[in-house]
Image (cartoon, rainbow, N blue to C red; front, side):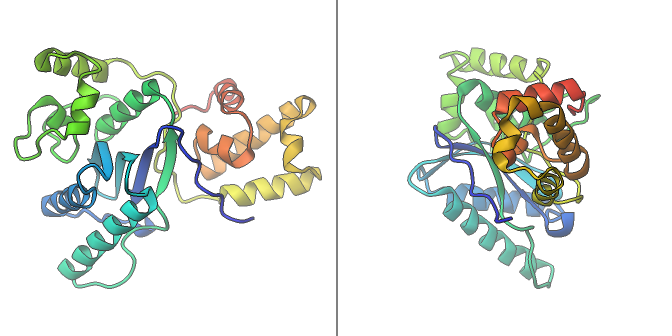
Length: 264
């Protein structure tokens, strides 16, 4: 089965993730994380690409990017090549640094945009941990005015004014939003290295003697639910990715996932 084309965002905004090759750590120290952020800010070229949020972890990085004058593929390619050259030179190594292409999902409305920003900023912290500005390798400290070395970007200002035109009030509202309980969204995340989702789908369709169109028939929904469970358990992909892969309506997929009680 051919690799699917990326889903296009109606707003031009995407949740993007890069991860280390073979899931290995690619940001080994503070200098590496700061270097990646520096490259990110450099390659966005002012307003050619807008950066609403980022968070650099040890073996992956999350970003919210608005594709403006620079195509997302080109932006990510330039970032990857530059950081890989730095990393290989520093650690005296050769070969791939990042795994495959970057992953992305479209962000088509403001509510989901804010939810993804919150999800990204909370990524370094476990469910029992509190959000903290002490994690300096995300955009959260910049939003809150805690990181003088990483000033707030103009596009981040545009996010803050959604909470208030007054800076302090906006930061307070932004922080309260981050502390609020997250709704049941299915975010782009780091899957385990398990079975390929496209292979699972292909095998399933062959076993049922179905075409892709059969997945949408009402009389097949109980069996389709079994497919969705297989995809989540064995390939660890999100509900949004399942909707893209199977061409089933996202809301229908979400309801099936909820009924299976497989949300994480």
